[in-house]
Length: 287
Ligand SMILES: Nc1ncnc2c1ncn2[C@@H]1O[C@H](COP(=O)(O)OP(=O)(O)OP(=O)(O)O)[C@@H](O)[C@H]1O
Ligand SMILES: CC(C)(CO)[C@@H](O)C(=O)[O-]
Ligand code: BAL
Image (cartoon, rainbow, N blue to C red):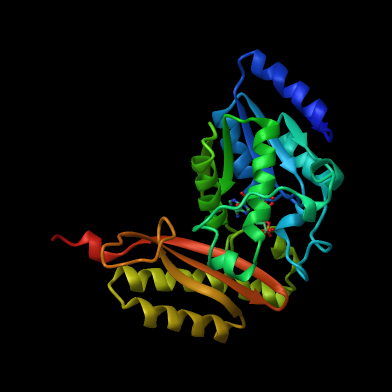
C-alpha cells in the first residue's frame, strides 16, 4: 500500500492506473479508523480495482470551540488497518497542501437546502467545509465511485446533491451503519466517553428504536418526538436535535412513507449522532 502526501505524486500514480483502465474507489476519512471506516473500504474494494482512502482532519468543517485540536490523530494504526483491509493507496495531505492560502481564504462550495437544519443548524458552516474538502478530494482523485457512511445521514445527502448539481461523474455509495454489540454506532468520538457515559451511550440508538416502533404503529409524530427527548434527558443526554424527516430530508407530510429519525445528543462534552430509517404507516395503508 502506497502512502502519499503530495498532490503531484497522487495525480501521477492515479493517472497511470486510469491509463491502464483500472476503476478507482475513494473512501474519505478523518482517520482514527474503526470497523465503520473499514466497512467503507470493504465496499470500495468490492466495487473498484483501486481503493484510495484519504486521511485528513479537515479544519474548515470544525466550528470555533469544537474539537479540532483534540480530534484523535492515529496515523500509524490507521495505515496498518488500511493495508490489512486491502486499500491500495492512502492520501494523507497536510493542511498547507490542501489550503495553501489558509482555510478562511479558501474558495468554498456551499450546498443549499439539505445543508440546512439538523447538524447544519447546530454547526453553522460545517457542511460548507465538508462540501469544499470533498469537492477537492473528488477533483484530486477523480474516482469512479466514493463510499460514505449512512451514520452521517445528512452528510451523505449533501454529497449526493453536490455530485448531482455539479454534474460530477462519480457514483456515491451509502454504506449501512456499523454498530457495537450494544447498538452504539461506531464513531471516533466514542473514544471521548468515560466508562459511565459509554454505558449510557447505547440508549441513543435504543431510544430511536422505541420511537421507530411507535411511529410505524401510527403514533402521532410531535408527542412521540417529545417523549423521545424526555427519555434521552432522563438517560443523561442533552439532546441537540431529535427529528423525523422524509428519507430525502424534506419535512414529512401526510404522503410521506419512507422516513428517517435523526438525533444528535450531548453526553458531557461529547456530541453523538445516530439515525434509523422507518416506514410511516400513512403511505403503506391502501387508498
Ligand atoms: N459506524 C459507522 N458505520 C458506517 N460508516 C461510518 C461509521 N462511522 C463513520 N462512518 C463513515 O466514515 C466516514 C468517515 O467518517 P469520520 O472519519 O468522520 O468517522 P467518525 O467515526 O464518524 O468520526 P466522528 O466521530 O468525527 O463522527 C464517513 O463517511 C462516515 O459516515
Ligand atoms: C467526509 C469527510 C472525510 C470530509 O472531511 C468527513 O466529514 C467525515 O469523516 O465524515
Ligand atoms: N463524520 C463527520 C465529521 C465531523 O463530525 O466533523
